[in-house]
Amino acid sequence: MREEPTKRFDTEFYISGLAPLCDQLVILSYVKEISEKTEVECCARPRLDIVQPLPESCEEISSDALTVRGFQENECRDYHLEYSEGESLFYIISPRDVVVAKERDQDDHIDWLLEKKKYEEALMAAEISQKTIKKHKILDIGLAYINHLVEKGEYDMAARKCQKILGRNTELWEFEVYKFKEIGQLKAISRYLPRRDPVLKPLIYEMVLHEFLESDYEGFATLIKEWPGDLYNNTIIVQAVVDHLKKDPQNRTLLRTLAELYTYDQRYGRALEIYLTLRHKDVFQLIHKHNLFSSIRDKIVLLMDFDSEKAVDMLLDNEDKISIDRVVEELENRPELQHVYLHKLFKRDHHKGQRYHEKQISLYAEYDRPNLLPFLRDSTHCPLEKALEICQQRNFVEETVYLLSRMGNSRSALKMIMEELQDVDKAIEFAKEQDDGELWEDLILYSIDKPPFITGLLNNIGTHVDPILLIHRIKEGMEIPNLRDSLVKILQDYNLQILLREGCKKILVADSLSLLKKMHRTQMKGVLVDEENICESCLSPILPSDASKSFNVVVFHCRHMFHKECLPVSPVQFCNICSAKHRGPGSAILEMKK
Image 1 (cartoon, rainbow, N blue to C red):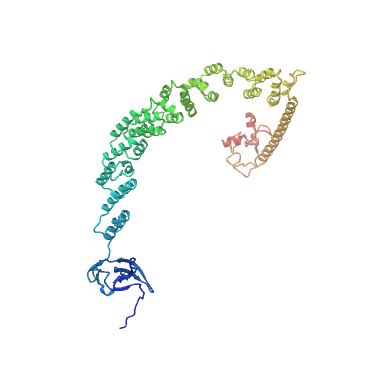
Image 2: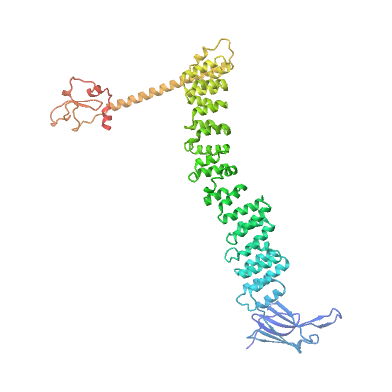
């Protein structure tokens, strides 16, 4: 049987032996080289090459030079390559030595990586081949990697690798923490300590916290915020913080952290005191979350000083827990805060704080003048006499005018507007609101010798008072500014009134005519008369029982019906019943509808 070659390629060396390795070839090569010293060709060490045959060439996969005794004197024929197919062993035979070669396994590869200090690659290789490796353990490689990083000073990287390598082994975790403590790097490992499943001994976490407390308050505060409160003994840490605060009592970071520790320990009252002292934004959230309203009864002033808006909203939303009377009592020595609270209460409900409306008059007058007049207008419980007294004492003209008018003393109010405010527009507006002829007369009398007031009156009273009454009283020769414009405006207003009257007249006439036509159409309609109708006089059926007999019936527009012979006079133009009751046509229809 004839055999054909499947691959053919050339080499640059002599071949002492060939052996198959799967689809590759193992070649024992004999090589000569030029000596650098003597520049003479000499024998080199034999090589064991693994190549991948290709159609026209080959690709070298690996090449290893073999060290055998006397290789300088050997020739190509002195080497032989034998292999054991079942065991994948290769034997290189030389005159003085026999070298055994076998395929590398993953343990060999890991050995080589560890020898080269490539720990990360070794760890990755072990994880990939963990089912096949026999010599190495992933944990041992990982621990060696951590030690290597620590020796190099890469503490953060070493601490980060602890999470993956140590896993849930608490003993190893605690061992590594103590090792980091010995080299002064507890801070490096603090971020990576397990907080849930597993949990280390409380002493470990306390040791780390003490390390931060001695050198880094901000880092300490961060750990307290991030770590669950059950990882360590809260009482020990609280005492440590208190000791440090004795040295630095105003340190805001330590105070804030102490408040958080008190919160974890459910000592909310103490936490609240610290938050209020610090004016911390979480104070209101803490009160709501833990229902601390009983703890803030004597701290209302502090809350109001911190944020009066939020404090008032919270107090008003929880009146059932802290009464209005209690809040007002607590704020007695801080009237400006008392006003803020009562003002917000009044805006929410005009009646809830009615017993304090008299007090509020003084508070508004002292701290919030712009809202005094709206308060007086909206309140139905404040004593007007007291309010008038306060406003007069402080010379609050607008408020006094309103109170005088509300108390029925409109003339005094108008007099104050004219004399104190000297504002003709406001006086006219006031007179319009009151719609009192006597007030208009007082206003005209006061304005008659004041040209600017006359101008204002001429411009505004046309629709309320006959302008002729004012014009007749103007003294001859008095110079009135913009008189011509005022007279033109009066004429324009008069023309406008005439046009409005004519328009209204046209509308009224049109509506009257439309209704008249509608009534006429209604009265011209036929009226149904059947056996159910009765004569309003004799009360017998309007229609005779014998339809063959002739009969006469009178039906009025009001729908009242009579036998003709039952009417006293004939012909009758109006219904006797409706005439007696002074009712118009169609009234009977309305009664029927009722």
